[in-house]
Length: 119
Image (cartoon, rainbow, N blue to C red; front, side, top):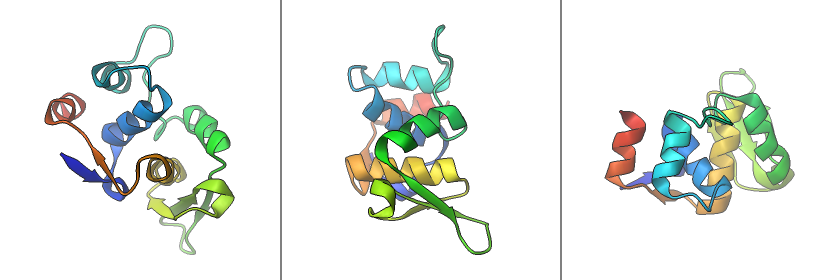
C-alpha cells in the first residue's frame, strides 16, 4: 500500500525511519524494533524519543520551527533548505522531513507490515 509521507504517523512513521536507518534489517525486524523493541536497545520510536530523534536531526541537518500560534511544527532537511514538512511535534515534523528527503512523497508498506504495526 502506498502512503503519503506527510500522512505518516506513530509506529508507521517510526517504521519507515527504521527502514532508512537500519537498511541491513528486513521489514519484519524493523517492525519488531518499533513494536516490541530489542533487549539491548529497547523500542525504536524517534517520533516519541527525543534522543533517537536528535541523532537523526543532527545527521540530516534538519531545522525545526513552530508556526506562529505554536500549534504545529515544521521541519526541513539541509538546515532548512529542503521541502517543509509539518507535524504536531518537532520530532514528528523532523521525521517526516527525513523520510521525504530519503524516500519521496510516498512510501510503499506491505499490508502484512501495516497489520503488525497497527496490531
